[in-house]
Amino acid sequence: MAVTIKRYVDTSENQTQVAAYQLQDQRYTGGPTSVITRSAGKSNRFPMMIYRANLLVGFFCLHVKDGPQLYGGRFETDILLRALSVDDRYRGQHIALQAMLALPQYVAQHFPGIQRIILAVNANNTAAQALYFKAGFRDDGQRRDSEIGTLWILKKDV
Image (cartoon, rainbow, N blue to C red; front, side, top):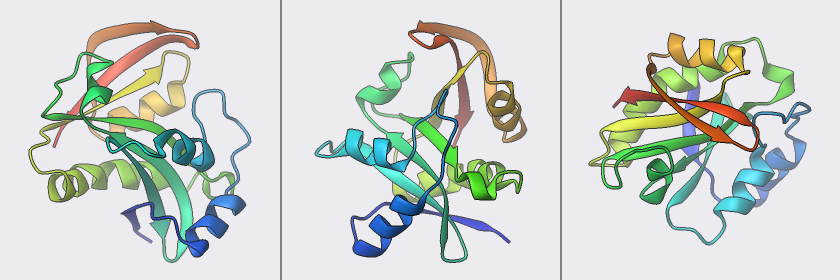
């Protein structure tokens, strides 16, 4: 069953699904509540939902303008993918891969002028690295040190 990407809108239905979201391991990412809180009042951050059928199964943030610049990206033509997570109940079902494969088309449709997606993945998070490589992200060797360890900066054209 395919997944769809939708921008989070603050409705009672979405709030209920976010409240029910299960994410135990937050070593490398935050869950929907964290993304929504950090995006509140910011016109450059967009909380995004991953749906399968009518169920919220994943979540992430798209950050334009200054977001990509944190990792050497371009202000006008890059978008930063942040905090990708999949609800624990739906792991192992290729949801994140499906979403990452669908993301370039979504970005092209909803963010005109964006040419490239950038993300930062922890050097120790080998499962996420494998996912991103499978989805077509490339590693040009750019690294960044952070409070949670070394980050690999990956990129994919839209």
